[in-house]
Length: 81
Image (cartoon, rainbow, N blue to C red; front, side):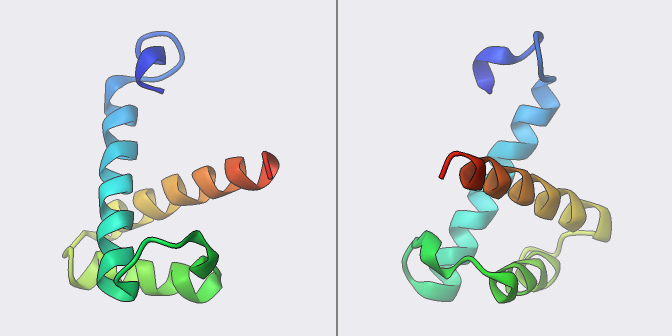
């Protein structure tokens, strides 16, 4: 994505994805003590949203954007098996 800045993505979009990645990694370490994608299910997403709103103190709009970014990445992973 970084290589497509100015062509397909804005720099701000890339920065949001990088921030989403850091938040997701921090949450998985906080919740599970490891990073393991097998723990991703609807309960994980609900817990992640709770984490963003409480521990990370994100506003509603920020939390929603991070969840949407996360959803897009998960959909790409599913499409690519």
